[in-house]
Image (cartoon, rainbow over all chains, first blue to last red; front, top):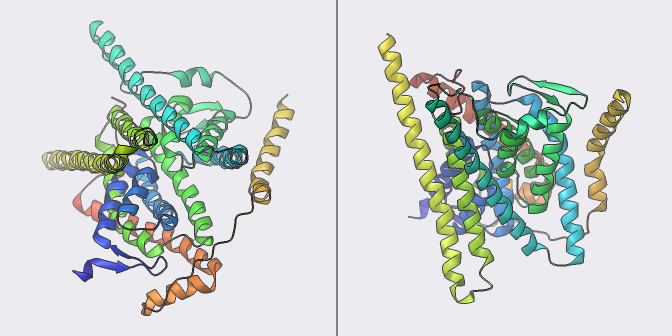
Length: 351
Length: 98
């Protein structure tokens, strides 16, 4: 069975390559569907496959750049990418990320910030999950009220509408974001991206997990456009990240390429699935993914208090992350196949 | 007011362009760790790749950031062709949140 293993030229370790492809497919589907890089899923996966930690992050970022580019291309064809918004947000993201990273370094000089940062991360994730499910509940309430009145709720109606309040701030220059259908002050996306970039910099993550809900709830993008635009941002920042990590010699391109084979297929499935699953379906699945991510981090955080269960918690955390990736990928894949079948059936009927 | 905001806008863009260099200058000096790829067990393109890594991280980086998007585009185009062949409509979707 030696042919199932490939020697990584830089890291010098032998890796089970089908595992890399499977991991790539899983995160490709989830990334293309939710609009995020998915570092929180890939890093434990690469570790399990035997990757040294020093190379896991760089390799993950390198494959993320390619995968996000594929997803962006696909979403762009559906009209899901607001390039103007993405470029405006890049300004805030870069400044915010650097400020966050510098802040962490400053805090490190004062004391150990790692635990504090992780707790902030947990709080933030639960806050995002609450926001998503609160929004879903609000929309269900609106739907119920509309049905009681004998009316039909507008297809584009949403539960929470905080963005409408933010759109009332008319500080020039004003911008019209065609794909998102938004007319607002340019400072709104800049401020939001600065905030999400700053948080991502502090937490040491790519930021897709925060940016996607921020685009929906603060900027007011439709779900599909938020997914596509976020992927555009991830592709650019991923390429920048790949460059810096490679310059430091921490990228294993061979592994990234093998993963990209799987991720290319997965990203297409994830992106095309957004065509068949409506906005609120994406939001609910996203909320569940965020809860899974928060629980896996929580399992690592409580370990000092229950040292006897350290090994069990470590294993459970990994199983939870990988189980979540598998279950969600399978769900998205099945929904995509069902959607394609239905579309082809309708086409045949027309003929 | 409008003029001031425009000035602020220009300052922000300038800041964005220069922030990375400012931040890099302010960054803490980390201890340099050198990783060398072991080329003894490699041959062909793998050996060439590992040698490139050992010789110049700059060329290695430039090639990496060229290869990744290129591969992404190639895979994307291939998938486009396959999906069009299957008959999936890749240009339209219904906008709906429900």
